[in-house]
Amino acid sequence: MQPRFLQGFWKLTWLETKIFTREPMGFVATLVMPLVVFIALGRAFGVAKPVAAPQVDIPFNVAILAAVLIALSAVQSLVAIISIYREGGILKRLRATPLSPVTIMGAQVVVKLAFTVISLSLLMLAGRRLFPGIRQVNVFSFTAAVLLSTFSILSLGFVIASLVPTARFAQPVGAAVLYPMLALSGLFYPVDRFPRALRAFAYLFPTTHAVSLLNGVWDGSGWGAHWVNVAALLVLFAGYTALSTRVFRWE
Image 1 (cartoon, rainbow, N blue to C red):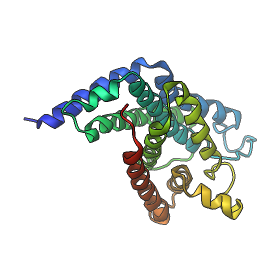
Image 2 (cartoon, rainbow, N blue to C red):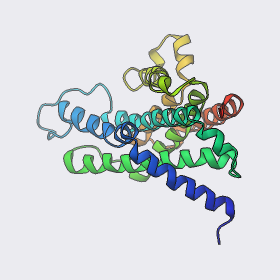
Image 3 (tube, rainbow, N blue to C red):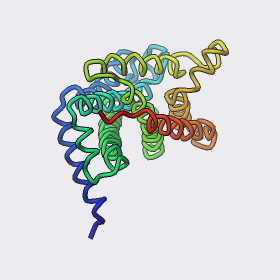
């Protein structure tokens, strides 16, 4: 028989799953948009063409871009839902229940990670069926790297959700913080070529270390060669989680 707190956790997780699937923007952004970006850019840059055929020199890894977009979409959805819950008084009512704050927020994290796996599975399925020429990677290792990256980025999402004043500002504020992080992540331009101050700023964001780790898994160098990025993702997760616990507002 499951302990009472686990029963409450799974019930809340199932409820949050149903709410998430009924929220069009979050559902579409997490599951559909990264897949559309992957397929559209992959075809535009000729990823699916045979090696002998002329291809465009891709300035970034399309699969890693789509994987990071999955994580950012999950965070955007988290920020929006938390803001709506706070403004509607739902967070206040949840806080008054016997459920602990860890259970309440943990349900949100589990839902986002579950849909990250689903979206990544769709991405890999599209890659295998539509782009047979794409380089084969270790699926489990790549999935683990995406989940670790999403976990770390979600901790920053809780900080953003803590500071967003109302649900009206959730999407624009989230986008204003998250998507510049993508530009500074090193996916489009090497981080080591940034000016020193900008480079130091970029290393404070989990997306920078996520892209480096994902590139390492993709090119076969593996986790061992990127242990600094793994450690940074864990440290940033701990730091942003500690900060969000101090500034988070239930009402």
